[in-house]
Length: 83
Image 1 (cartoon, rainbow, N blue to C red):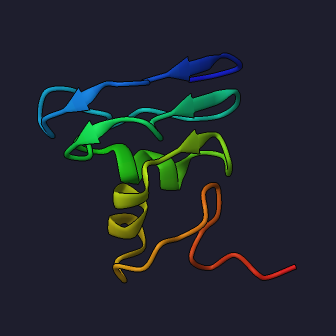
Image 2 (tube, helix red, strand yellow):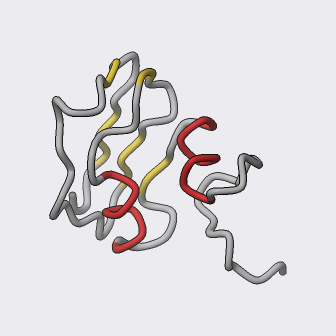
């Protein structure tokens, strides 16, 4: 994903239908914020490999990504310094 905006508004993911293994999020915006269902296979790993603030995740997937069950602000990482 590079340079464009991809909006998954209203999409429902089952977790295995759309794999994101090997996806690269380098620029633009991939917006999953208003989706439902299970986080697609490989998406969280692809987000970690990609550039910051390119992918917007729904709240429930953000909690799964940081592993704490606590909400993490969109576009940030659990290790990002406070400014």
